Image 1 (cartoon, rainbow, N blue to C red):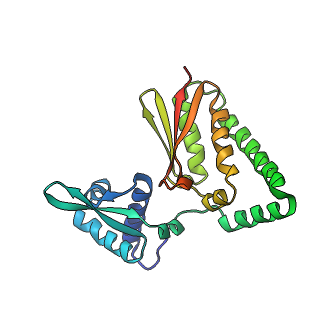
Image 2: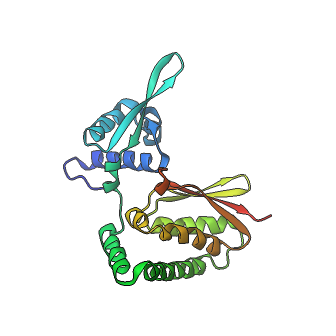
Image 3: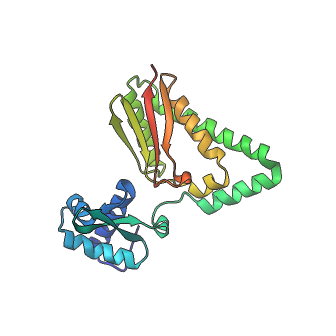
Length: 216
C-alpha cells in the first residue's frame, strides 16, 4: 500500500483508513476518526483525497429529521491496493490446465491442493481441543495467507470473517476452489462442529463469513 508521493505520516494514515474500511466495511468519517484517534475534519481530508483517486466513494444515510450522514466505502478500484496472491499467474495456470486436461483434470489438481491445505491446517490445529482456540488458530493461518481474517464469538458459535480474498479472480474462474475451501475448514476444525458460509465475496458480499457451531 506504499504511496511515495505523500509524506510517511500521511501515507500511513491513508493506508490505515483503507484498512479500516476493508476490515470494518462502510463507515462515517466520525467512526473512522474515533478509530484513528484524530478529529473528523482531519480524516475527511484523507477521505476526499482517496475519493478523488477513485479508491473510495460516499453514500448518504438518512438520520431522521437531521442532515444525512455520509458513509464511506471502498470502490472496486481499491482492490489493487490489497495483495492478490499472483492472480495473473493463477488464472493462466487454471486456463492451461483446463485446456490440457479438461474439467476433470482441473478438478483433480484443485482437490490435490485442498488435500495439502488440509494437512497443513490439521498440523497447526493438532492438540487444540477448545473450539475457540481452533478457530483463532485457523484465523491466524488465514491471515498469514492474505485473507485479513478475524474471529468473533457469537453466543455458542464462532464467526470466521475474511475481509479480503487474495485468490478472488482464480476463484471466479474455478469455483471448485471455494467449494473445497468450505470442506477443508470443516475437516480441519473437526467433526464436532458445523460450518455454514453466511457471506460470500463471489456472491456480491464485501467479505466471506463462516458461522462455526458446536454439533448438538
